Image (cartoon, rainbow, N blue to C red; front, side):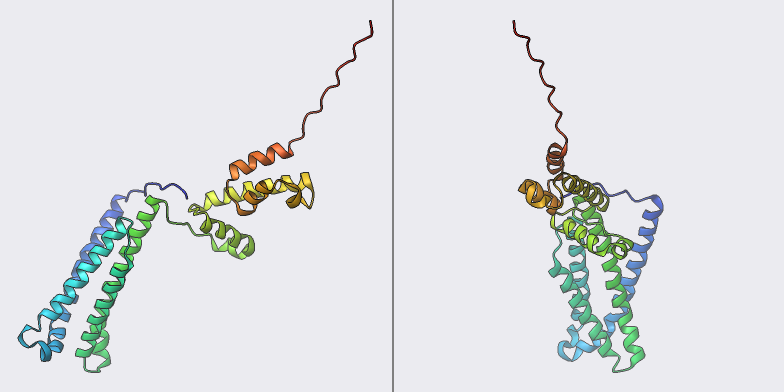
Length: 241
């Protein structure tokens, strides 16, 4: 697996933009909670009576708690999907309760559902950013392969992607360099042994090059196998005495 590298620090403009987004998110969360509070309370009143306010307050606080812990665990590279899906479930419950308050009116249903959906979309964007940066630092985020390469060489690109997944190669440029070195070694073996190089070359070298592993050792072995050996200079015979 590739070693992790420190993520590029945010620029001042990026920090300002993130701060502005955080302010907007706080406003969205506040307005969404305020707008849904009365609707959910009215829906819950037949079952909870004067304590109906507990339902919207508990659901909204539960969503915030789940989202906060889920984002923290993502930041620490210890994601727990159950928290994320539970937050989705509570958000879905909030949307359902708000939509129920519209009593079948399509316009009211859309207005009631809009802010919770915006809330969860923003949370997913933040989660994605945190996960990417934590993955870069831990060396677990695998870079994608350009679409153009898939179109021009689909089969070889699939094999390259497969090796990246199997051997946890996260850097696409490193994977390309390894592929170039592997193909160079294969060309040397083919030139040295002919078309049946797979049966004539050492089995461990064939395995390393076929699977694309331990390439440093494989290339050293291939160089030693294919380098022409210097001819021995015949020793002059001693004249008889």
